[in-house]
Image (cartoon, rainbow, N blue to C red; front, top):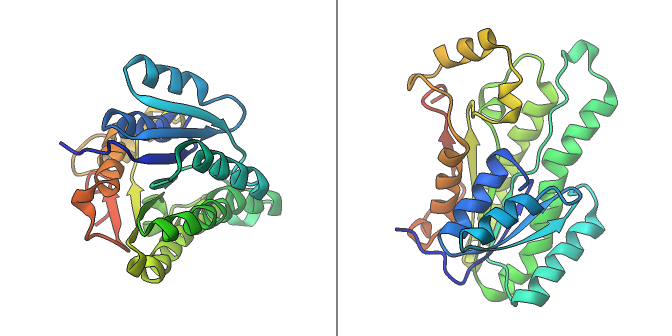
Length: 246
C-alpha cells in the first residue's frame, strides 16, 4: 500500500471529477491535501475527505492569476513548512472547429490549461529545490497525443504540457524532483456525461477495454507517481486510456 503520510500536496481543479478524485485518493494515503479551485467550489470535497478521517483544506484559486497562485503556495508553506506534491489538473474546454474558433477561446484554453501549469509549477520549484525533493504531476489528455477534430486549442494545450514536463524533468532531476504526466483517455466525468448516448458509445468502441475510465483510475496513477515507489520515474507520460491510444 502506498504511504504518503507527512506529505503535503497541492491539487488544482480539485472541486469535481478527476481533480476531486485525486484529492481524495492522496488524502486516503496519508497526504495533507490543499484542494484548490475557483471560489469555494472545493469546500464540499474537502468536507468529505475530513469526514472520512483525511487531512485537507480548501483554497480559492484562479490558476490564471499568478499573484493568487503565489499566495496559495506561500500560505501552504507557512502552515505546513513544506510542499511535496503538485498536481496540475485545472483545465477547461472551448471546443470549435479551427475555421470558426474565436481567438478568445484559443487564449482562454491556453491560459488555463498550459500557462497556468507553468505558473503553478514555477511557484513550487524554489521550495522543492530547497528541500531537495518533490513530485510534479501534470494531467494532460489522450487528445494531446492523438488529436481530435474540434479541439485544436485543447489538443495544443495538452500537448504543450507534455513537452514542458519532459524539459523540466531534465532540469530538476539532480535536485531530487520528478516530473511526470498522466494522460487520461475518455473518463466518466460530468463533462463526458454531457455527450449524447450515441457519441459516448462511439467512443467506447474505440477503447479496447470496452469502457470509459473512472476518475479513480486516474487518481490511482497520480498517487503512485507521488509515492516513493515511483522515485526512479521522471519525464514520462503515463497513459490511462484503456488502450485507445498506444
